[in-house]
Image 1 (cartoon, rainbow, N blue to C red):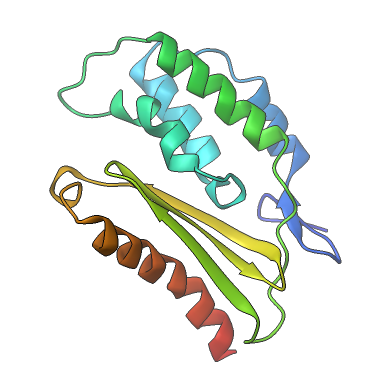
Image 2: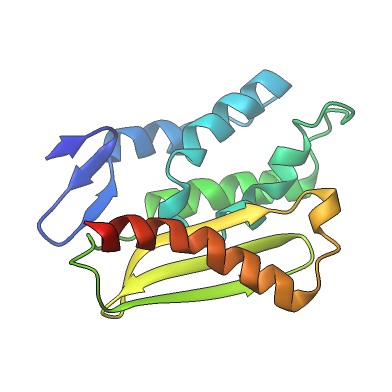
Length: 160
């Protein structure tokens, strides 16, 4: 069943193939507006893509106010990587009750990532880039921060 750009199946949820096809056929951006359009399209499905923020980082940097639009090799590589990851995104398991959750977290100086799992199956991926003032967090604090970010969906589901 199609619902809000997702396909809901008995075993979980996956991205809508029609939406993925749009991203897959998206031409190489040549303007800031086109970069924003592409990011707007793919960010909706970021919970299906492991390490989304790290991959999208070079493209996101192009959208900063003071940034000059310059499509470097890294931008092209990550643009193609995002399109590839989106077309091969896995099916995410629908949560089943309040038990059996495990959160895996990882942090670097530039970003945070995590996976919310239940019964050894992925429920959601989470990642985010750190702003300048948060890049100075100690490694332990960064891991704690991403765990707290990943706890929000868990707390919502465990309350049901």
